[in-house]
Length: 342
Image (cartoon, helix red, strand yellow):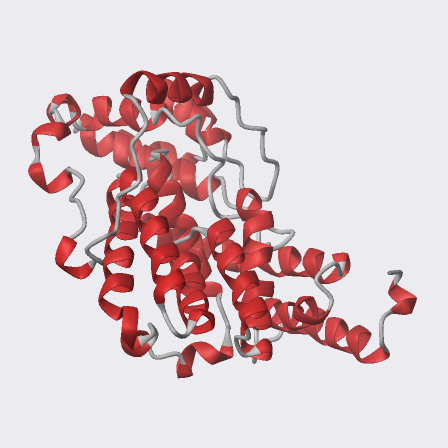
């Protein structure tokens, strides 16, 4: 549809959203939320989708979100599950799904499959927190079995969609929410959440404050850890039981539930090799992420930094502190300017 074919109230909603981006009483998150309302009614409205990205590209918001994320994850940490955690954190902070406040997480699952669904959620968290992909595989199968067995599949699908979105699995969340609508979940509530999650699924590689996706091998993480924490980098995480995959508690699953088969080790190695050979498309945006490459390769020309940064580094005689301060300085300089003077 062309812009002229949409109802007049849609045009007014988008005009209001654009004003809200820089409005002191509202802000980018509220502006994006209004765009999601439009996308819930018209999923293919390209102007509404583009306006969400414009809202999220606000320079002050980018600075705040980068700072918030680095309190949890270093920007050079390119391990796949850390990339998902960045997305999930960003989604939770920016989400303005009004029904969230009436969505009781303690009682969101249908009672007849509550224990089973919670076990699936715990499995999913193993991938989300530790990168144990087996957890995500098992979680999907547990959720599917719960959907098949429950007397309230619409509620189960809506809850599973919410959990997947909350953990940054947007493609899975969209699948669950679309099926929830078919099963009769509350249309207004579900459609609004679906619109928001679908946008994040389609734009997850273009969130302005999130670094570009790595090559799947955690190369940059390994390089930086070898420089910052050599002893820790050499430690074999595989010997730590806390980091190993924990199978589901069978007491919370039906007696006839069958765990999904795992792929053979050689097949997994071939898949990993193929993925490692895929070069992510460069992402252009307001943040100059090239600083991560310079930091990783140790190709930082200190003489090109602002004088205040050079003086700060000269006062340090501890190599470890110097690296941390250099990382901070480069990160700050990569931010988009907030005004013409800057």
